[in-house]
Each structure stands twice: as structure tokens, then as C-alpha cells.
Length: 362
Image (cartoon, rainbow, N blue to C red; front, top):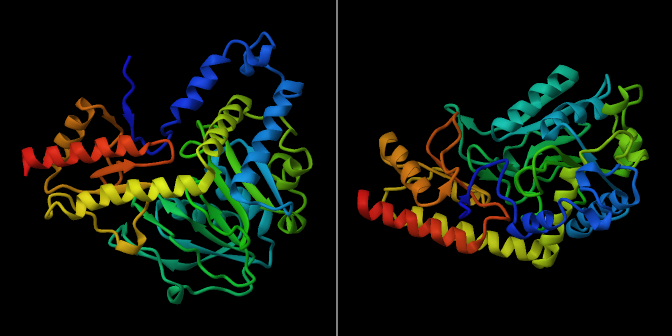
């Protein structure tokens, strides 16, 4: 069976090498006679996978010993609530920078729990086409934290450089661009990411918490909603999503084997330049309205001249082997998600299809 080019925004493509490695030991994990899905999370075999996964996250992201890596269930959406539950006291407030649908969802949850204010909002006529500049931020120097969504999967924008919040710790939802580029983690008190885009299959959130933030977390929370519960027990307080963690381990080893985040960033830049170059050179056949400096290198969104032509683009694309290129249902259009696992060769095939489609329908 021929595999399709998978451009779904999430759950997204996994590296073929990671899938093949899992297939080889699916029925017999490390000579144990059972699958990793059947192995106790207290077993020696699983413990090695669990701890290596945490170590690989720290190694690849350049995290020091002042950070704890937590492997939690509930996806990034649960973190929308866990962050304010742990960090917002009765006399505290947090800043939120609204740049898309997911940051809107995050502040909605925060307002249920405590005081959260919008310190920037780039929405215009229901859409987000830019990232706020430093001078546009209305930051509170006494905020408990400042929350950002580093990449916006629906609207196709991305923070190319992160805001300066002074002494206020950044909290970053990096679900769709974690491990895709190098950055300095120092300003971040918390980084969280749903696994289903650049890390592995759905069912896990990787949550990175600075130790000084752990010391400030609220007490008296429900046990499983406290970061300190999971930090104290190495994310083994309850049964973790062990197979998802196992697959994340395979993906992290793949990233390391490819040369780490530096290599990922170089290739991701090449991929983005190829697609955006095709859009910009199409004389208006393909249209991207995102500010040039804020274009996402993970989710390329664009429109064609009519919705009928967009439907034909999606149908012809699928027939040519390109899966998941329809835009999000809330905005329509086309979206090509070029995460780490979407190779440069595959993106070259996408570009060839785009040019052929334009030649036939332009």
C-alpha cells in the first residue's frame, strides 16, 4: 500500500522511521515477550523509555536542571485551565496575547479561574493576520505570567521572535511548532505542547515548568491538577499514556538522529520558502494575506479565487496523493501543514502539484 503525503494539521504525520521502528517491536518490546502497550508503567523496560523521553526533551531544547519536564494527559486544552489554576492567586492577574483561536480558548479558561486581561489582540473582522509588535503590547509588570500561542495553526501566523516581558515569566503554548526551531527558553516559566503535531500521536501534553514556578504554584488544588504532584512523582503519579510516550521517544530519537533542532529549523525554512515562493509568484492565483514577517513556517494557509476552485484543489490534491490540505472549517481555504515529519522532498511534490494545478486552471 502506498502511503499518502499527510498534511493534516493534527493529528499529523509521524516520521516514517519512527513508525517502522515501532512496528518492528510492536509485539515484542525489548525481548520482554509482550508489546509496550501491555507493559506495566512500573516495569524496568518502560521506566527506561519514560526517563529517556524526558532527557531527550531537555537535551534537544537545551533546558537546564532548573526545568522539570512533565508528561501529562489531557492535551494542550487541559493546560488552558491548569496554568491559571496553578499560577493565579486571588490577588493576581495574568496577561494574554490574543493572536488566534487557541489563545482565545486559553483566555476563556483563565477567566473562569481568575483575573486575566487581554494585553494585545490582533483580531480584525474575525480573522488574525499578524502578530503584535513589542510597542503594541499593554503589559502589566505585576502580572503573574504572560501567555502566548507561539504558532497559530488555523490562521497561519507565528511569533518569529518572542515578546520581552521583563521580569514577568512567559507561558507558551507551543503545540504546533515545538522542536521546529531554536530559541532561548530562559524567559519561559512554562512551555506546553500537545504531542499530536511535532512530537508524536495524540494523547499527551509535554509540559516544561521552571522550578522557581513550581515553588509558587497554588496549594490545595485537586491532586491531578497540581503541577507539583507530577513533578514530585516524575509524571508517574498515575498511569501515564505509555504508548504515546513510547512513540514520542521514537520521534525525539529521530529528531536527534537528523541533527537536532538546528537541522529541523534549516529544513523547515527551506520548506516554507518553497511554498510561499510559489504563492507569491502565482500572480494572484494563490493568495496569502498574512503579514510577511509573521507567516507561519508550520501551517501555510492560502486562498484561491473561488470556493469552487478550492474544492477542486482539495479533490485533485487527494487524487494526487496529498491528504489533509483543506483549511480549517472555521475559515475555509487551503492549509498545508509542514511539520518536522513532512520532508523537503514531499514539500517539493506539493509545490509541483500547485504549479501544475495553476497551469491547468489559471
